[in-house]
Length: 469
Ligand code: GLU
Image (cartoon, rainbow, N blue to C red; front, side, top):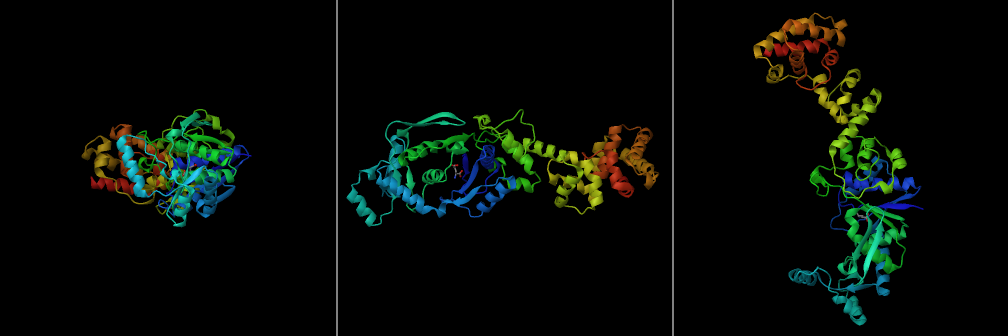
């Protein structure tokens, strides 16, 4: 039975790149009719951020990642780790260390000065049983350390990265149990992956240097080792490890900004895995069908928000007007009648990158705008006096069209007559109208837009620009 786990530390809200690890694990489990265990690795008490756990859970729910077991919090399992650490001490695979922080940092400084690898010098390994007993009786603060073999290598065949080896003499005697009686990450992760019957450990490549330590722990316990794979690390555009500094946000933030779940899933899926030319929109179901661990690449993917924008816009374009209406309505920052929104949507839908973008178009549909005169003049390519004259001619031409005939194709005809009348080019005239009516340079098609604005608004805005000039 395939059993995977996602084991976030609640030390902050994970950005979208970190959520990819959960997505791959979930999809891999689904694909293999397996199970997904959620474990909260909250043993680093100093870095704990209590409000991050609800966000982590909300992110998984939003993406549609349903866990079969958990969430298990490591902080509620302390006795288990303590017992396991003691077991290793009894079997001679681990030992108590009573060294103080001062001694350890002096030791490290001396090692650094010599140019030696900073590592524990094993002073406490030489303590006699009686000495250990006395210290424990005195309640001297202590940790438990793993006795790492001096020779040999620890290696494994990584499901994604291939064969990897580490020399044992490069590995420090790891602390397993801290002086606060909390386990370290290494002890917690190994004990839990074993007890929770995890069959595949799939995590980011940043954990690769921890893996030999874990393998030594499996050996020390005499436990079988799960299969292990490390996903490539996601890089920012500057090729440094992706972080919030690169603008990477959490899935919840993106949803707030008007991105949709399917494009987010698609974007995450292609960060390290590929399918054809990586342009197909996916959802969880499709991804489960297509996903193949063997197609997860070693090469580190680059985070490119343009791709998310591409998928989001593509997804929006595939929605029906009705579906889109329901999605954008709650995001309106302007008061707008439903009927008006219904008539605007077909004009702007292909320009929406996010749902919130709807508001970019609404100021001139919903509110009253004042087009900047300099922009009108600049975009016309004519001088101020010529623009004033042309706008005057325009106002009267459109005023002749009855309200009942206020339709795109009639308006367009008037527009073309005006070109003849003014002697301007299409571009010059239509741009002047566009900016006068909206205050913007890029808008939906001019005459469709005028139809929706209606005769009164069109006349009022053209007249206002004309008078102001
Ligand atoms: N708690 C680790 C993290 O925050 C889990 C690493 C692992 O999956 O082993 O990502």
